Image 1 (tube, chains in turn green, brown):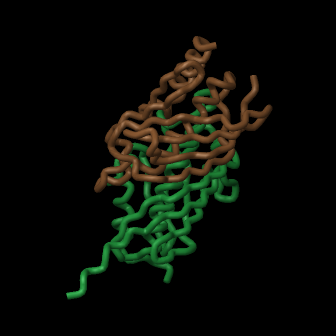
Image 2 (tube, chains in turn green, blue):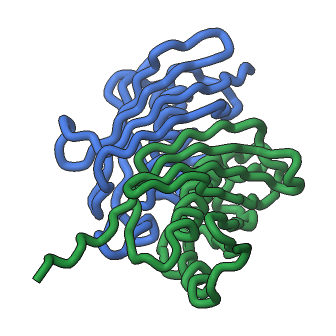
Image 3 (cartoon, chains in turn blue, green):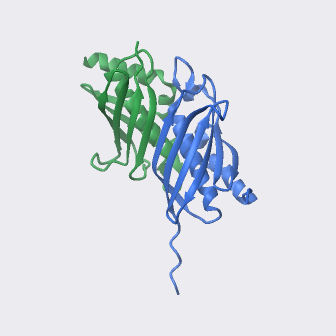
Length: 150
Length: 138
């Protein structure tokens, strides 16, 4: 299976529009496939973290990584309704993004149990083989309680 | 010391555009800083609860560490983040958040920093961060 249902793709695309912080960052949907997702944030003046260089702030990368991990979780859980909460998020910053460059992120939920999802993510500015940051995260999956037996 | 520290902090907060994007502020008592993140609708990540975006919480903790470092280790350039681990203890609610950084070790090039954030009750933190930062020299 390499495709997700069209309905889910629509939900994924809307995820960045209806989340206030994602919308405020100008986050854009890139792609979604089973257990994987990709999002990007184009460069903007007010998102700069180092005024001397014009490099985008680490905090923007943090939020993009977290959000893309959430998308990969949703893509792994499929059509089942659920909500997630981040347990922990570890980020390694390999290098600063290039001045005035946006950031793209790809996340993969490589293991999903009944209650926990384990996700890895990578972020780059221009070239996917030259990463600016990687992330490792664990999410709690809150599935709706089963209906009481009648 | 106190006046110089206050100037350092003010410079840091004013100069970084992303700090203004978040709406983050800080107060200084001696050399101890409390970072403040007033609630704003654009910080929401989950509209149903509503809760602060996990990324915003992480960014707030990271900026708190960098702001405290700018006070303790003044430098004309911004210090760089090497790695951070963010622990989420409770949802960040639609309220003002506070954070304080503890500089566990400040070496010649590397600093190890712990940060804790809370909302209504200091004893009930909702998130924490541990991280390493590369110190810029003059």
